[in-house]
Length: 341
Image 1 (cartoon, rainbow, N blue to C red):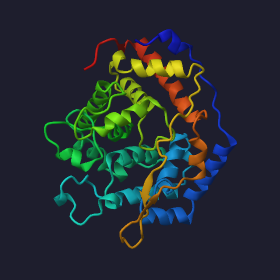
Image 2: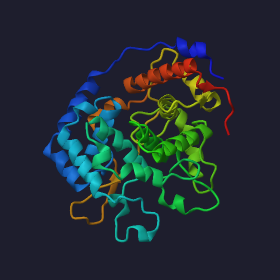
Image 3: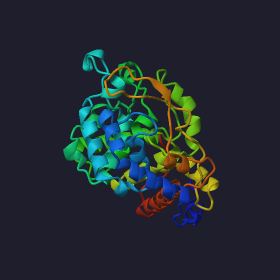
Image 4: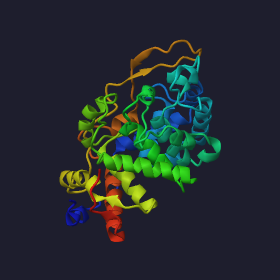
């Protein structure tokens, strides 16, 4: 179980930020306010990775700098999302003639951009009223979601995904959660992470690859974008337990908390993985002709914030907040020793 004395003894480091990151923030803010960024958003709100407005905005938000995103960029992003299909195509008849890579969003994409737009001051519930019902609609029987369309065609098993679930859960925890249907989604998604103890991949045949991917989750990554690691999962479970005033089983988080306390005794978290590395992307065209594929490119802020072995102010801040939340749960009697599964 969790050694609460060791947890409480971990110091809370002051904020820190390198000159390279400060320059990168300024570069990204300038780009997002440019005509080039507007043209990119008009062509496609998401592609290409990793150097389109989508990724600049996500990274600024992860750094706590969403307030610097120009309003013209966030407004254009909302317009771009509204242009996409308001459903997740599962059957060919769901969206005949659509380019599923460019015309449809996925769960983790919507889950990551929703908080960014909200932090920019956009009333996302009013501007994109279909997004929260989307998460509820595509939640699977075990509380998870999967951005692989074919996962929903499987029978006899539930091939849900940690990556496809964590960002929608983060989004649905914003604000009051609205209807009981939304709060039901949150409870089921939190139970999904609890049952996985934050570290276990899918036991399904269809999503067997996730069991291999799960090995990497214990290595913390930044930026997250839509990727998963155990600190991100722990943070959303602690937030759920606090905001929804729910009990959090100690057994669901003990392995992760103990490992983080032992790995970062001074409270400063270092980057252990570049989840975005070696990716490819489509290169969207204005005339809707077939989009070629190429290696993904990066930008200065992404390079500055993702250096392996370097201390991460954002991850350090999140770990500090998680420890404080855990200690509040202990004081409230909501970190409980019941078993999971």
